Image (cartoon, rainbow, N blue to C red; front, side):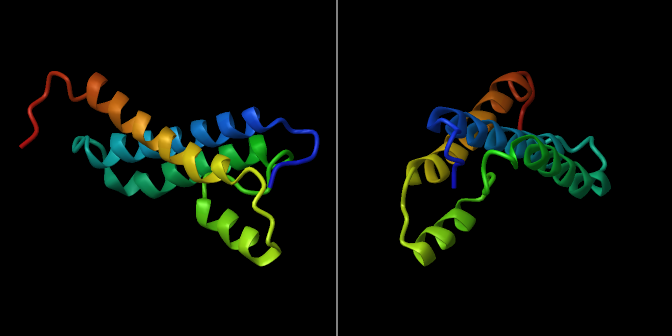
Length: 110
């Protein structure tokens, strides 16, 4: 849920950036076969920790729509549902698109 003094558009932007960063790290490690996969869990954890440290004082949920939906169903409060359901999805889609356009532009996928 958003804090009372935190505008909804900042929440949307936070969720969008969070979804973008997590999926971009995923693509950078899984699609790019030259990276060492032993570091992948560490990088995902570091990105998630960074996102929560930056935005935890303003939002109780971060880049996890299931966590919001469970709390909303339990409390029957569905304020700003679109922030938590749509923003991470748009962030993930934009990260995948951007990674494909920048990194995979000159490479052939087998």
